[in-house]
Image (tube, rainbow, N blue to C red; front, side, top):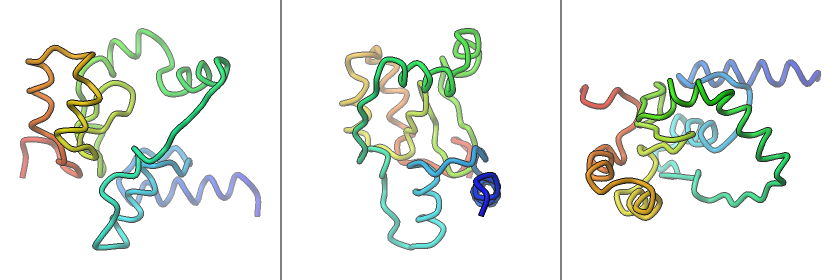
Length: 134
């Protein structure tokens, strides 16, 4: 089976799950598949990974995820809801819907002002719909 056809199949699955169809099976895709298949899906698998990257690898990852400083300022410098099964997302892919109140506080207390942190923790665990809507 050709590599391109596997990527297309993964993209088709991602579209069906209401996700960004990037053709990559990462933590978000695996979680969405588990939630679709199992009643007792893992609450968050994104925190189960440890990653060591070279400087070159980190640069490639940042370029892939962000693209440019202008794009970061325009689209990623404030909380967003990317749609699908995601929750409110901050920074570069930190999904508040897949983190607990305590985890969010632990991860962000040294980076965010207390008032901003308090505004964010109210949406922990919410995912799969636009926040503030039934």
